[in-house]
Every structure is written in structure tokens, then in C-alpha cells.
Amino acid sequence: MKVPIISVKKIVAKYGENTVLKDVTVDIFPNEITVILGGSGCGKTTFIKNILQLYKPFSGSIKIFGEETVGLFPEEFNKILEKIGMLFQNGALLNSVNIFDNVSIPLEQHTVLPAEIIEKIIKVKLNLVNLGHVINLFPSELSGGMKKRAALARAIALDPEILFCDEPSAGLDPITSENLDNLILKLKEQLNMTIIIVTHELASIHRIANRIIFLDEGEVLFQGTLAEAKNCGIQEVEHFFEVGKFGD
Amino acid sequence: MKIIEKTLILQGEINKFTVPNLLNRWEKYTSQKLEYIDLEKVISIDSAGVAFLDVIQLKNQDSFRKLLNIPINISQTIKTFSSLEITVEAIKRERSGFIENIGNSFFKYKEAIVDISYLTTEVIFWSFVGIFNRKGQRKDSVIQQSILIGMEAIGIIGSLSLIFGLIMALQSAALLRQFGTEVFLADMIAVLMVREMGPILTAILVAGRSGSAIASEIATMKVTEEIDALKIMAIDPIRYVVVPKFNAITLCMPLLVTLSMIIGISGGLLISIFYLDLSIVTFVTRVLEVLTFSNILIALLKGVVFAWAIVIIGTYFGFKVEGGAEGVGKATTASVVASIFAVIVLDAIFSLEYLGG
Image 1 (cartoon, rainbow over the protein chains, first blue to last red):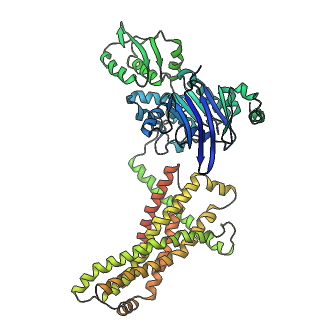
Image 2 (cartoon, each protein chain N blue to C red):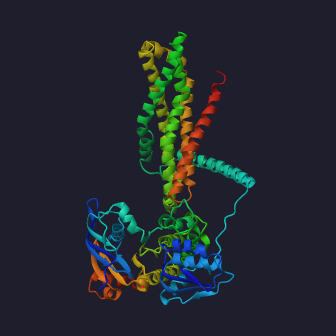
């Protein structure tokens, strides 16, 4: 039996009095692409941010690489974060530095690799997302889609063991979106990455998802494979795939 | 890592943690010409490991032939992360020369002056039109802005004016006492506060408080596409966002200047009573004698002109913002610096009025 790389047990997340996640229990397995689905405002992004401690959960347990992370000191959690990459919804590139420097940040901060090797890694990572030519440009000089791809290059700079992607395909054209999916598959296959993606794009889900977690009003309605999801007998989940099948 | 007959034999994991050590060990072999790298015993590799292989191949490019015995599980990784076949050229930034920079600056300032002139005309026009036609403006926005710019600044302007009045009076009192001319303290404080310190102190505080707020608010609205959204809704952002601020500051500034002048002079009065033993009647009589109607009018006019400069400059830098959060910060800083500079230059121009005495 596979041991989960991330194990979330009964987490509750609140914004003030508003409970966003209610007793969410989820296992994420290594070398799989797990897609987190659900309607807007159902708590998908909060769920990811809870795992990454960008928001602290109100209660519950989160184990990453078998280690309990709730209550860890920031310095201890930072060691775990070094093995994790995150692609934010709007890229979150630093506007004050160019693309090369943006991608170099994790490499310079967390490795002792010489500049020559770092430069090669950056060029390769940017080339993988088809942005080899913008290495000297600043984020403000890039389109929304380019920013997102540059942010992905930064997220994979350290070849993380776990990669989180918050709506990676949103705002991208279908071709770029397909290329991004292919890259995500490549990362999973070649670097044994575990990838957790929040997305609504059904075409993308069909291409890459190994496992689906469906959230509704802060609760897990379903977790299992894509095929199981389509015939799970849960009305909300089946309806989600039914309504979106035009995009298949 | 070892070399046997021009073949570098690698083993184990080649990744971001082992590469620095491998590179150090590689330094010993740099004199040898390599033809092959044997990867048979390599268990795993990541992009740093592939970059390491690339570096070794490039350093031996005259003699190097190929990678040997690549395990199936790492061959695709090497293919994906190798930089050897990347042909994409990075866009190069052209660097301009010294003379070119001077020329660029000249055109930039010229453009800025033209833009500010247009902006001023537009704001004044819509402000005037707004008296007769309230369309295109937020309801009660002038009142809201007056509270923000005027009411909320009363505390800081009042307290700083009092402190300034006290400081100036104290500094001068000792000197005037030596010559037995204590009574002229009232004249001096009144003239200084009305002609100079009242308007300029108020303007600098308003520039720091409200000018920066105006610039950052408009810059943020532009960055977050709120300005575009207004345009799409066929609403003129100048009329909707800027004019209420312009009207509010035009109304508030003379009142704030008046407050500053009165409180500053009161500071002088306190020193006169408690340090120089002058009576209130003497002090007030001197103040009323020395101040003319035109002094007060010019002070209030100064306040209005400074206020307009602060709003226009804040608005200009707000609309000129480029980039994201960093751009907002730059626009705000630039607007405060430019507003204070403009206020001091305008004050110098007003001072010419007093050349004749």
C-alpha cells in the first residue's frame, strides 16, 4: 500500500467567524497528479494555503513527508518548504527584478551551486516553459500567460518533490495550456514529482489527473480517480463533469 | 568519480546536493582530455546534475564524443534538462549613451510638463463644470474627501504649528531681550507665521499626508485595472476620482492654513506671556497692527496654489504608474518629493511679492 506524501486529517480553517474548511481529511500520494476541484469559494485555495502554512489551520493535522507540520516552528517548516514548489494563481513574480533573477532566487537561497550551473538551470527551466528569450525582461514587460509560465519556471527551479499549482491554465490559450500540461506530466515522470493542482479546466483534468479531490462548501465530497469521479453517484460531482463536457 | 582511459565514470546520485562536491573533485582532472562520460552506475539525476554534465562536456568540447551507458530511467531527464541544444537567443537590452540619456531626460521632462498642463486644465475644467452638473461624480465624494484631507489633518497641523510657534518665539525671545525689544516678538511671529510658515508648513504636511495618499490610490487603481473599468463604463476617471479631491483640497487648504497661522501665533503668545512677561493686549495689538489684509489674502492664496500643485502632482504620478506593487511605491515616493519641491519653488515665487517691502 502506498504511503501518502501529504496526509491531511480533520483540518478546519476559518476566516473570522466564517468556517471555510470543515474537517477535511485527504491523502495525497507520491508521484501522482492530484487535482483539487470544486466551485468558486469552496475552499480550494485555502486548502493549499493551509498545507503550506500561508494560513494556519484552526485545528487538525497536516503531515508532509511523514512529519507533522501544524505547530512546527517557521525554521523547521522552511526545511520542508525547500522541497516544495508553488505556482501562484497570478504568478507572484517579484516585479523589481528581471525574470532571470526571479528564477534564480530559490537556487541562490537554498543551494551552494556555482553561478555557472545556476545559469544553466535557469536557462533550461525557462526554455522548458518557452520563455528562453525573455530572460532579461522584467515581469511588467510580460503578458499574463508569460508571467504564469515564468512563475512555473521559478517553482520548478529546485526540482521540488512536491509542486503546487493554483489554476495554472487560467487565462492561457488552449495550445499553451496543453503544452503546460505536457510539461507537468514530464516533471512527474522524469523527476518523480508529486503535483497538486487546483483547476477548473476539464480538458486539462482529463490530460493529467491521476486522482481527484472534490470540495464543496469546505467539505470533501469525493476523492478517487477520474473514472471513479465520473460515475461516483454524487450529484454535485457528476454534474460538474456533465456541465463542463463541452470543453473536453 | 574517477577517470579511466579518457572516460569519466560517475556513480550514485547526481543532484543539487552532490554537484558542488563533484565540481570540486572535477577540478583535479581538468588537465585531462575527456572523450566519454560513463553513467552506468548513476542512480538518479536532476536538472543540476544535467547542468553539471553539460558543463563538463563544454569544457572538453574538442575531445568529447558521447555519454555512455545511460540508464533508461535517467535518459529522458537528461534530454529534458540539457542546455546543450538550446538555441533561443535572449532579447538584448540596448544601453543608451550619456548624451542619449540627457536627450531622453529632456524629452521626458518636456512630456511631463505638457501632460501636467493638460491634466491641470482638465481638472480645473471638470471642477468648474461640476458646479453646474453633478453627473459623473460620486455622491458626497467632496465631503468624504474633505474629511480625509482636512478634518483628519487638523490634529497634526495644529500640534506642529504650535510647536513651531513656540520654537521660533523661544529662539527669538532671548535675542530680542538683549536689545530690549521684546515687544517686537509679536510682530516677528505674526509676519513669519502668516507670510511664510503657516502656508508652507501646512502644504508640506498635506503633501506628505494627502499627496502620497492621492498618488498611491490612483496608482493602485490603475495597476488593478480599476481605472480601465471606469473607462469601460464610460466614466471619466479624472472627473470621478480626481475632481472630488481637487475640490475638497481647494476648500480645506485655506482653512488649514488659517488654523496653522492662528495656532503658530498662539505659540508665540504663550512665550510672550510666560517668558517675556508681555500682556495679552500688547501682543494682540502688535499682531493686528503689523498684519495687513493683503498679507492674509496672499497666505490663503498660497495655500490654494500649493494645494492644487499637490493634487495635480499626486494625480500625475498616480496615472503614470508602471508595473505592479513596486510601481505604486515608486509613484508615491516620486509624488511626495515632487510636491514638496514644487511647494518650495512656488513659495519662492510668492516671496518676490514682498521684495518691495
